[in-house]
Image (tube, rainbow, N blue to C red; front, side, top):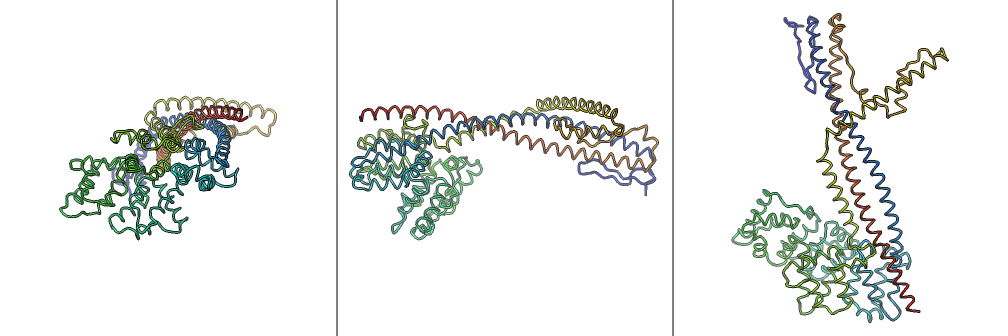
Amino acid sequence: MGNCRGKPDVIETDEFGNEKKEYSDSVKPDIIRKDIQDYYKLYLDKKISLEPLFNEKYGLQAILDEERERLIGLISKKESLLSERDSLLVYTWERDADDIYRAFGKFSLDKTTLVNIIINRTKWQMKLINDCFERKYGRTLLEFIVNEMTTMIGTLATGGNTGLSKLLTYRIMSQPERDAAFLRDFSDGMSLDDENFIEIITTRTNEELRYAIDLYKLEYKKDLLDIVKNKTSYKNFREFVLKILECQHDESNKPFDTQTAIQYAQELYEGGIGRTLGIDPEPFLRILSNINYIQFESINNVYKDQKLVKDISTKLGGSFESVVLARISDKYVYLASKIEKALRGFSVDKEVLCRIFGSFSRTECIKIREAYNRSGYNRTLDEALKSTLSKGNFQKALLDLIFPNPELNPIGTERELVDDEKEAYAEGERAKSLAENNYKVDKIILRGEVIRKEKRKLRKQNITSNSNHNINESNHDTNHENIDINIATSETNILDPNLDDPDDDIPKYTWDPIRGRFMDVQKLVREIKDCQTATTNISLLKERLIDEINATKEIYYSMVKSCVEAEAWIRILNTQLKQLKEFIEKRDVAAAKASKKSK
């Protein structure tokens, strides 16, 4: 029932805040007409607000299409270069496999060839050489090398398990089988070999350590965690090691925020040096077991007098101290200290040198050298190796690892595939960030407006063309006099998606005030409901457009990233191809000279 003033009985809003009105039978028509006029104005305002969104959508789609075409071309170029590089590499790996096989003569061993190949190849290259060797000679490279070096001739030639033979063996082994073997050696006694066990578990990535633990269980039928529990007597050390073996080390290399760092510093102080007697191990286990060096530094920077390392050494002691300090140290500085200790002893500990330089990639060996040189040992690493090791193939092999000779590597680099992947990925991420920051919405909208005008022009031409066609048809066939030109045009648009028009998606509504004067209340009520529905649908369309634009933006940014990654790979592959061709040419010349000399 209506109120005495003829106003709407109920006033509601829809989900977009638009006022929705319900009218009683007694409401005056002029009231409804006025409301329709207001609602129609709202409809028109919302319709106008769609224009920049449609323009942005079309402009954005245009640059996305351009980027897609660019990416297709780049991927094609990259694949072509990869194919060319890989075919040359297969030839090179076959030559390497043959040279290694021939290096083990009947009465002599060509150690120089072994060093030049095994030491001067990256991990991924050695894997491919091993695959090639196994195909050609029916056994793995590791099986062959170990077998040959333990024969009488091999023992006489290399001195049995000398530094060189161990180093070559470690370089050939895969990371999981090598680390699993180390973990077995350091846990096989009555108790753990704490120092060396700590070295392995604190210098591997989560993935490397996880693989090693899994292979240990598979190969040796033992659970490493059970071994640690049974062979460690000091609870704090045991619990810290078990936390590390969960493989949850933070590898982000990002510092803690100031508030978190202050909180952790306070907890560590109160659990350690702040206690008169003993320690509370809980904060040390919880905070330090899985943090990285950068995060530790952020804690130390707000710790009292920045003496957290000193306080750890003062309060912890023993193997617990050793594993904590190893965990919080820069990996390469820690490994450099191990090398210095191996070189400073009464005799050089070649096992340590072989284990470290045999385990890490060539790029990491360079980082170890750099860490050693800045650690204040009063000599550089190459000087230390030259002064403590006799001149020979073992010394040369170690020097080649810390000072790679590009001419001895087929593609002239010490980088692993993962290094190239990281470089390309980083360039792609930078490009994506730049595209996000430099997104010029005004330019995109302007471009979309031009595209839409052109589409409307083509659409109009198409309609005219179809109209003329239908008229001509009607002159020849009277049965088609009443053909619907709109249907013909619609079918043409379906066949030709380039002639679509975004205005087709806009909910249509038109209010004619003159026509509205002659409408009764019921018709006016239906009219305002139609206007309300159209306005609500406009709001829904606007939301959909915004979602589509945001989704398209993300696709565009990802496309930019992919394009730049592909460009980085093309640059890398071009460099590798140039080096590879030069390497093969030099190798062929050297082989020809050697053949001529032997004759």
